[in-house]
Amino acid sequence: MNGKHEALWAIARFFDTIRYGYEGHEGYRKSTDLFKMIPCLEDLMTRGLIHPQWTNFLDLGCADGRVNLMMSYFVRNSIGIEIDKEILNEFEPRKAHLNRLLKDQKIQPIPENVHLFSGDSLEPGTHARVKEISGVSFEEMDLLYTYITLHDLFGEMIVEKAQKGALYMVYGFSRILPRYEGMELLIPDVGSQGIAALYRKL
Image 1 (cartoon, helix red, strand yellow):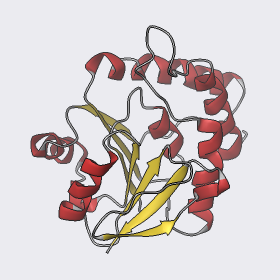
Image 2: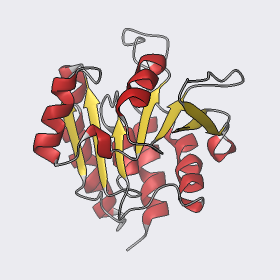
Image 3: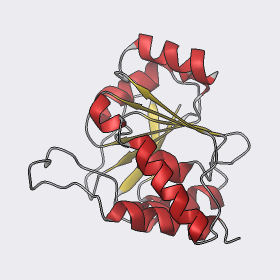
C-alpha cells in the first residue's frame, strides 16, 4: 500500500477540483491550497513541531474539513470547528468519496482521528462541547490553524486561553505579517510557500 506522501497528493488533487475563490456565486468561500499545504506540514514535521503520537490540532474555521483530512496523517487528533452547518455537511460525503478513491489506488486511507464540530470558534460553549465529545480541551491544543479571516480575534483568544508554547499557523499572508502581543513569530514562511506564518504563545 502506498504511504502518507501519496495520500497527501491524492487529497490535494481531489479538493483542487472543488476549490472556491473570489468569483462566482460561492465567491465568499476561500479555501486553503492543499498543494501548498503539503510542504508546510512536512516542514513542521521535519522541525519536530508536530507528531502523530501527541499533537492535538484545531482548525478554527474548518469549512468542509479538507485541512483536517490532510492533518490527520500528522497528528493525534485533527479537530475542526465550522460555523456554517451547510458547509460542514459537505465533509462526510466528500470523505467517503475520497476514501473510495484512496482504496481503489491502494493508497493509505484517512486515519480515524478527524472530529468536526458545528459552532462558533470564539464561543466558550463550542469548546466545552468539543472537549465533552472528543476528550480534548482548548487548553490541550498544540497547533491551531486559521485562514486569514478573523486571525486577530483568534490570536487574542489563543494568547488568553491556550497553553504556553501552543503554535498558531495563519494561512493567507504574503509579505506583511501581523504581530500578536503574547506570541513570537517562529517561522515567517512555513515550508517556503509564501503563504503561511507560524507563531508560538509565550
